[in-house]
Length: 165
Length: 360
Ligand code: SF4
Ligand code: SF4
Image (cartoon, rainbow over all chains, first blue to last red; front, top):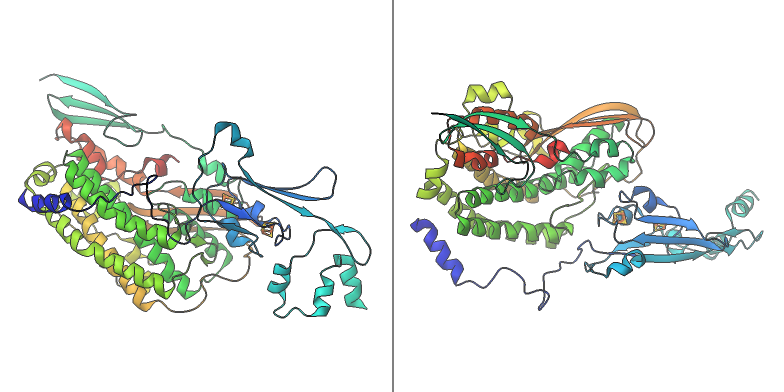
């Protein structure tokens, strides 16, 4: 017993291991996988996040008036696995260090991360399309020159035409 | 003396998971045991065949919390075998590091539970406090205290910066001395010895007959460590000293775990020294052809086997796993008879059962 007695005594004079949360600070390391945050401006609607999400927390669908795409992430189904962030090509979706998920029961279905991608019209033919985000251009081309910048406003068909010209 | 049958479980105060035992006793002594499993069927096997290969990474990690890293890890190895993917060398080391960190946390938990079951709660608290160091490591490096999400198809999803390597090395150093201290307690303390020595004996020949795996086998003198017998990831480049005890009792199994924690620390330190630079994952989205593969790894509880069959689509056609507890719990029929009723939870804990893995 004596072997443990020493430890017990030592522990007695140590400060508590537990954090005084919620009355004080608690340990939140950088890179903690908390609630996801979405940035519609960077999103290219590739739907990879929707594809990899095991919980089915993410939905991307066209809004009723067909003016764009709506992104919804239901925090209550999210498992904080971070796969969406990992596979998102433009990092339009990120996990934040915010782990606070307490909310009222009545807010259950409103407890979502939302975003809206408004279609833009192709500069060539005018068909509505998902805007190409600067983040994607950055990823595809190291240096984005004027020529490439212009391609951003064209739909795939017009881009093809241009390339063949 | 008359014989009684007592039911233990499916929900029992000392068993943390639902499992039903029909124990036959004569006086205070156990003479027979019947196991009834199947109380927490969660249908994960079926679910995994409805989800695509990416979603399964997350799903399989949630089969169980203590060996959570080994499930996606082994699953990825099976996928990579089918697709013929060679993962970057740095990723192999990073996989080993994640695995060994989980092993330390898992073993410490089991060791702590032992103390709790024999009523030595201050020791329980002390070990759990020590485990907190490992929990902090997981949280800081991976962003979560249980599910690391370390693996992805073709490598790993995390990297270690210089800063994090330093942090990890420092934390491991902090573990060492207290670990030696508690190892001594589990070896020498009067109370611990009284409850664990000669309890739950599983002789070597019976252990072989039942095909037990992991620390249960190694506590009965069998060297069957998958990391050495059929190395995967970076284990062929690392030195793994398999910890074998010959006591065949609860104490031997506890000591195997304690020594394996020490060994895991050594392995991680070795990794941190040797880890090569380079990418941590393949840089394309893999295509998985039709095929089948078996992969295995050494989970904290023993050998974990994955069988996977694909048909060219990104939804697995069949997925099947054999988890360590499946092999180990049958051997309880040998360990139990002859012991006292009070030792039931202790002996069950000594095989470190993972019901959620086994019945998923
Ligand atoms: S958030 Fe990322 S992964 Fe999801 S649709 Fe947008 S770009 Fe694709
Ligand atoms: S973190 Fe995981 S569960 Fe949550 S939205 Fe992203 S992929 Fe889905």
